[in-house]
Image (cartoon, rainbow, N blue to C red):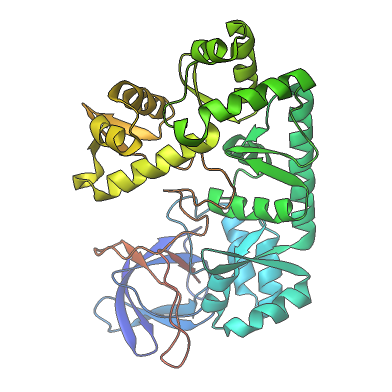
Length: 399
């Protein structure tokens, strides 16, 4: 239903989306307002609705959820979230939001939507026994018992995995996230893992996450053999390491013995088998991806060929092609004929630390996107000219 929305001195076209049964005369109901353009407002601001000719009033209410989704907006969970925003007390509203899955709130957005000064974050955290942490410059909040519960779930999941796979270096990041906190976005989950890592609960190696107490132990004989092999595939030779048969020949060892050790080191995430019997140090693979990123940034359209990578690594065309085919198999590069470009969603697969940014992953808090067109915009959160800048959002539920 098209209407005109009046908020302060602003008049804007809007469309009403019912979130339940249509209200009768004198009745109230929650609705979602889709605006033809963004406006600045805060939660619990009052508004008036008039017909499109602006000749008569239809109703009025208060803005509630400034970040309502485009889908699944009629669920019971969304109704509870609107009830949380309905509360006049800021601490009570925040506590109610934190009680909903996944149990984390973008506190920077909350303060903006409630019209609060950023300095009030510490007071809200102290009153609600909350833990605060920063992600991409934005403050997030969680109940301390929620962090304790998640930490226990992560420890239990990793412990079970280690018991079933004692020779594995750990559990893949994404697999762990899906099993313990699937509704928490990857960037936020990575920030949480940093907290548990700093607390000594877990450790990370590349894309693997393990309990800090878990180690893939080598026998003294294997440790001694690895100490002999490592210099051959690292240092200046890291971009063109010898194959298994060449390592065995150089050290006068049995080829199968070297191969078995290298496969075990691969399970320990210390090396990667780029081609058959051709192992590279995990750090070298990460370095190669970084070089490929530099090449792509300088290439037209970010597409580059094997010759360009070969020249940067100085390791021969055959090895450069094998490296690219290895990256293709893991989805790190996308191929078009003889050209490649990096996949932004996978380019950090071989990163060496949990702090490395994960390219292409969006924040779980949703970022605003002001595309023009009728029905594309909803009421964004914001402030008047005497307050901090508005934090816009795509959708807004209102009553």
